[in-house]
Length: 330
Image (cartoon, rainbow, N blue to C red; front, side, top):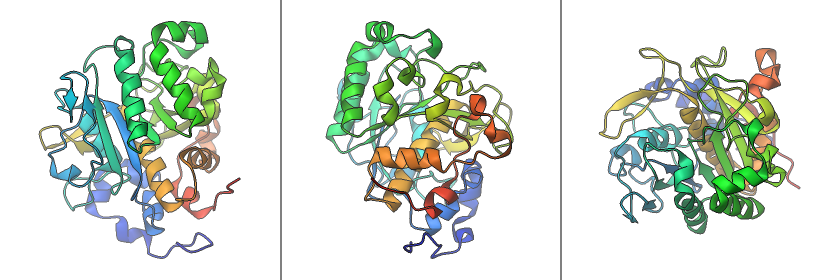
């Protein structure tokens, strides 16, 4: 990386079969970021989900801390459902000439397991504890590929405080301390996001540490077959590929048993954005996670269909622009 943000290596050097297999990477122009040196090295992301099969080769060297399994009440995690391992693959699977690789293939993960198949609001204390533990162990980026099924437009601070009081308190505290929380808008094909992605509407102080994510089709041509719009979260919302329904239409990622599987929806879209935050922060280590968050929103592609902020918020994530246009750090 030079002082002007020019390329030191040709982007196509990174456009391997493994890169092309994860179709979202090309749409967000990740190879340009890699060519400038942004791979996630030295940056830790907390993954709050169904756990992680950390024994898979795709995660060798990628786990900074074993995290915690709130289902089995022990350090380390077991992934019965597979969702967490799939999100971890989108985020940080190794670049090893096998299958696919994550957007931040040199980043570090801290996995947490809560709840498996149930609504998140049943696990308020587990989520709050995971966020605090992740922060205490070095994470400033928190991937949350889940949301409570309450429309953001129906939330007030008082109501959310009834549902998730411990999580709200920790989120407030960690945002003040510089953390960034990433959430999917939800998969109901509605014009408004679910509770957590839209939470700054009810609690404005959270906005500086918040990103909501909508899912596009694999080619970026339109919102996918189930993603909610950005809606009221448009000021802190960004769009990335999240796969679509149908055979071979998802994003390729890591299955919990070691095979490669397709996943689709706003969950993998959120994981892609969390990885992008890590990869860009590794390029700009002088920046805080919240400054990187601002930079990704400011450099998003707002042309053409992405100018529709109700659907696409700030626009399509553009990792070429984010790594080419040097940020202004106050």
